[in-house]
Length: 291
Image 1 (tube, rainbow, N blue to C red):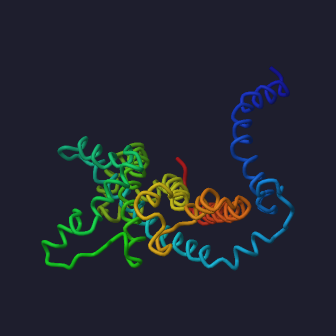
Image 2: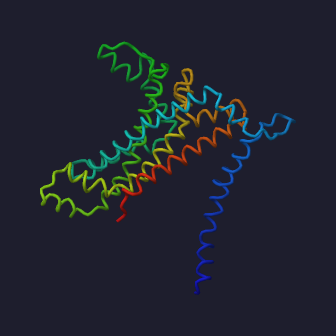
């Protein structure tokens, strides 16, 4: 097979994946960008070109800025905590301890549960008066509190649920990476007199950087695409205190039927995710070493 035939053969192998990627990723993105410059069609009135009017309206929309701020706080609350907890659990269950298989299953179980089921479980935990959390705080003599109905705690409750569900999923990737690292490195470090913390900081964690980069990208994406838990637990309330950007896009598109404004919001979401991914690769790629 000559070089030209090899290139053709390679592109033909990539063609099915490229078609699916273009049809379900690139085309919808460009279509959404185009619709963001149009008005929303109303009945017999077709969409017309409005330019940047939807983006101008976004800048003047106080709800948009509120949900964007909520989403940033949500990301800051979930990403570091879920990654750190996942790494801690992976290191723990990677060691030689009794019941290791049961612990792995217990940590991973929240991941396989449907998101609606998870939301309903935690909805019972947070229920005022007779919820599990209320029973614990009542036993300690603390006053009753409406955890999901208070502006000060609604978003924090969603953060806790997300960490609980995502940490086990990220743990699997760290556990697979830990098992691919040769035990001779730990033995050599022990011979040299290195402690566990020094070995983790100087040897183990740098070798886990490819996994950390992968997990971080997924954690950032997950922090901007939460809808299910919000619909079941808070519906964005109270007073948009727990509304996130994707949930707001969902409401604008399917509750208020403003598809043009929803398209503009979607483009902002895509731009935020793209910028976050570029920053992650720019700052972490130099610290990432592949074996």
